[in-house]
Amino acid sequence: MNPDLENLDLVELLKLLEMPPDPAQVSYAPQTAGWWVMAAAALIVLAALVWALLRHRRANAYRRAALRALEQADDDPAQIAAVLRRTAVAAYPRRQVAKLYGEAWLNFLDTSFAGEGFADGPGRVLSSAAYRPVAAADPLLRSLAERWIRSHKRGKT
Image (cartoon, helix red, strand yellow):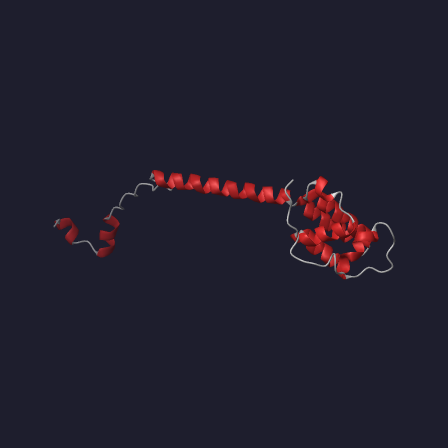
């Protein structure tokens, strides 16, 4: 041992210590190609999900518009009938829906969603509501129309 160091106390010895050099910077970028491939695949999947969500949202825009129109229709059966007709024309081919009236129209509404109530229920009034005034509408008519708008099966256009 060095004789000069033997006479120093601990504090003086600590002052003689040199700090070790800083380690090299660690890169946060992936080091292997597999991670780059995985990141690219994740971006593609994310883009496909966003595209599918936008497509679904655009495809159901007519439903949102119909629900807004139904809110404005209150409990007027003639206005509810008009909203349902416009919604059906937007969701199904015009040549299939436009010619329907009376019992055929009500049966179409019943068969196009998982429910009943148009041909044998509060929706029965819709077959004639556009042609003659109805004294009092069933309060269940609006909720039935709303269920149909939300859950009808979309036709092939």
